[in-house]
Image 1: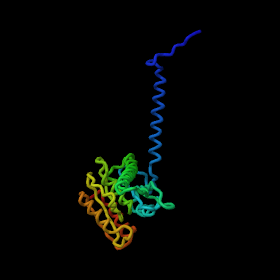
Image 2: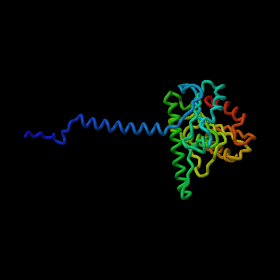
Image 3: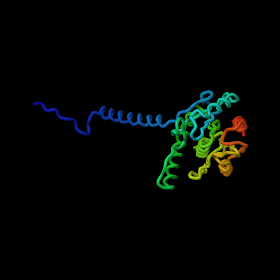
Image 4: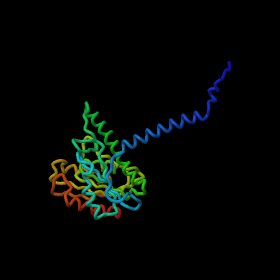
Length: 256
């Protein structure tokens, strides 16, 4: 009987080792790609594709609104700013029937656990939103041409994104419309380059009190960011005078 000896363990066929490594690396890469795609936010674009030398506004809707809630406003602004790209991300969490939110509804056994979970959820959403910013940067858009804007809870998330921007990304501006000052999650201190900000809030707002807008304004000023403040006689909405202020702000930040 002929005996066939197996090769020594240290001398197994090199191509098999390479094949196993290649398959393992491929599966790991695919898993990361699937995670990134599944974790990416849906984004509506109004205006041209992002490109070098052209402004980009990332506009975040309020809690419970549909993902396209700010599309009419973006289209209205786009008529006066045809070279500006408006990116409208959709909140990652479902609310009611067709509404979306930036943080999920949840309960916790204690306040400490609630705050810890809230911090995690806000940080995760902030990372998702920064991928939207990075997608514009990957097309050659300078951070100085990017404005982060939002309404209500979206305004609060805009503040989070802007104040915690990477040191290599000096943003062009921040727009805070009827923003929420959540005492369970204090406003971040930030530490990057100064950027101009527009903060607007209605004096008759029964959803988010005026004091929240004032608190955000003062927080930004203490952090060294020049703030244009607008209080208007109205409820929790984007009033015509607010839209006019947004348009004026977007026409000016890069020259301030």
